[in-house]
Amino acid sequence: MKLMNNIKAYVGRRVLSKHLSSHTRKPVVCNINNAGHIGIIYNATESVSFEIIRDLVKDLSHDKRKVTVLGYVDSKKLIDNYLYRKGFDFFSKNELNWYSKPVSSTTDEFIKEPFDLLINLSLEDHYPIQYITALSPAAFKAGKFSPDDQILDFMIDIEKEKNTMRNLQKEIKLESGKKKNNAEIEADIEKKTETELQLSFLINQLLHYLSIIKN
Image (cartoon, rainbow, N blue to C red; front, side, top):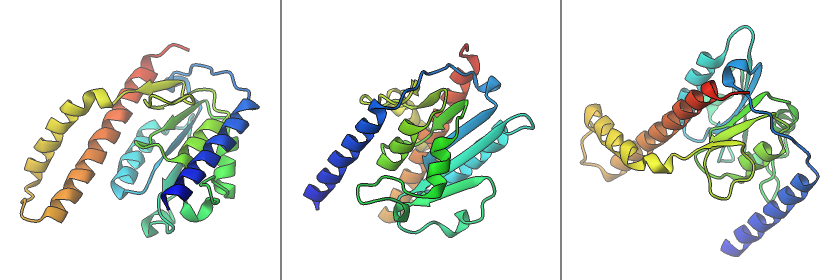
């Protein structure tokens, strides 16, 4: 299984690299206040992420701006609550080929959109999300810092804020009133709060810097 996963990862990197070699794009800095069409792509596997993204879309949307959202569910089944969410599109493992390349009309349409600003809010390096972000013709691309990333034009390093976020995480757990008598529940709480903290921090930092960046 590990060998096959390594082969898939290798093929995926090779295919993406080949596409990028013929993919001409000159980044154009875009202040979020001047963006007429914003694309958001994120890992929708955890429902708490959807709730945070939903609130973000409400904040960003107004009459003169269009916001298009695409969520990736790292499972073969879409979460039922996602099926009829207006303004949100989703894709799952069932819409990937054997080496995890997205192969649905939904992802194809998202890739073709010439966004003024594309925001990648995935906290982890999922190949399907990387593939879509890389091939998007968006004028400006922003997201979480990764040492090997050659796709994004602007990145936020949330690893440097780990200690601050850990302290906030402890406070949230104490305020939640959850007892630590069940290891499985405790693990779920910790995972949820960590996702909330990291995603919220990433969004806040991106919105701050993208609002002051000069075109």
